[in-house]
Picture (cartoon, each protein chain N blue to C red):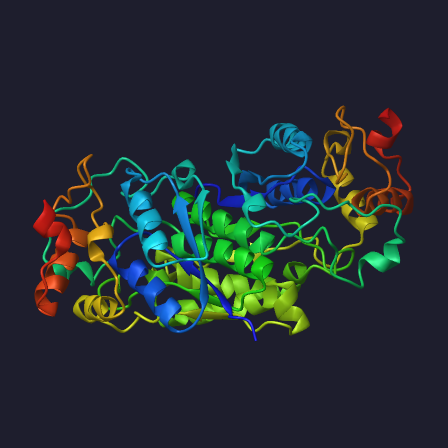
Length: 230
Length: 230
């Protein structure tokens, strides 16, 4: 029997890079999917390319989609990224960095690719702990997408493929994610988490994503290779 | 109270143009959304622009998305569009013109725009009669998307907006759609249905979409202004 294929959403950050390693370790031939969606920086896509290559994805596609056309988020529009917040405040509210319907759009494209590949598995690095403020990171949302996916596609309707959306990180702390990735050989020196990096890729150290990353490495008892470099 | 807003998916064909007129007639301020998705022809987008202007949409956005990256359909890849089929054969199978996950992708973007606009209504011209072979044109699919939408978004989770997906054409025949549109003032001379038009916009007259259109105008007892022109 040939190796099953899986589409893996890959941003180039700690979480999605770990997910790619998990999908590989689970025996899938992995197809990594990233998006150029009007982010302020393209550096995270360079990280995604490096990570996909390092972890041996069978293919890596970067799709252009312009979420800026709609506005509405600090990650796509000209709103300041919040800096220096306490991490416990991040989980309790929907942050301004929330991009409307982002995961729905990303999963829809993953579904299109999965159907074309004849793949029945999609992996996404959502996390319900650190980012509980994002509605589209919750288990009930993921289950609703699976239901939709199996009604949306030729393969689902014909019963030839039962689509599953895997969220291996959904209940993990950042420290658990990092420990898991290190065991699977992820080089976190290739990843980028910062919402607002310098042109040379140096993280700002102050945005929510940098703070969660720093806390995660501290709790895992490991030095962040990026912090070491800059 | 200000006029409620609705996002209307608009391809520039008979169905979606009729839907835009229906949404206007229902009292919505309409926001038309079209996609340049690696179609063989951009002529249908010109039709969409003309229709949006003629029907007075508050805004019309055309988003670039490249479904060709995945392949898998006669409408996006280099597979021949079938010609000269009997219309009763169209409904019984999933056609090669089926684009993987297309409506899921389109509705996801509509959802993103709706959330940004503070709109709770999305209109889509799916039809379960003429296109029963498309899994993502069925009522159960649309209901699953509504469920997803209300779990996916800040507005849905906070209970400030209850998202609805309207499918006014879902049970209509093509003739009923055309009669409805004519009553609402749709100029079908602006629309384009053909999957494979000549460079000047002349329909091929042989593809599934042309055949359904011709049958619809015949049954409605109306001359198609496009057939008259070419």
